[in-house]
Length: 180
Ligand code: 5GP
Ligand code: MG
Ligand code: MG
Image (cartoon, rainbow, N blue to C red):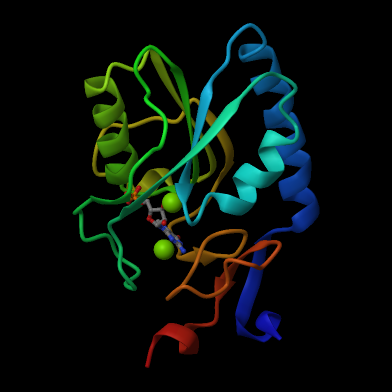
């Protein structure tokens, strides 16, 4: 049903799961002697976070933050606002931010600055997707799943107007879906 709206599958379910196993192994190593606070950026990071944490064999605490910058448009407004803040304090903690995609970098830049201000001990970023051509601020993720071209992608957490987050793969929508 959802598949009829998809022009092309960019990253298959199998490729995603394989990559998550690799990232999980690296994170297991890097956080072996720590107790990081893993912060999922809602709602897009939810499927990635859910699968990734099961591949990290170390103590981790989970928390969530919801920030908005996009509304229903496919281009960033550049404005970031907190919709839901953390329950935990980041002070003195090793923070691992879990994101679905980095485009302009503004969302994560805002979060990194916020967590620095709140005195996190360390701040690292793991993102499933990175769109380097979209970057507007100087921001690099510490762990990246896949580089994606400058196209609007959906699935595996990523939405268009709140739809398609539940697709198990990453794809590109047919043009007629958003040009009306
Ligand atoms: P940034 O602040 O880096 O420009 O954008 C980050 C957020 O914008 C992502 O967390 C995601 O919600 C949204 N975004 C950026 N690029 C895409 C895209 O290609 N597809 C979708 N569905 N969302 C995107
Ligand atoms: Mg996101
Ligand atoms: Mg969105």
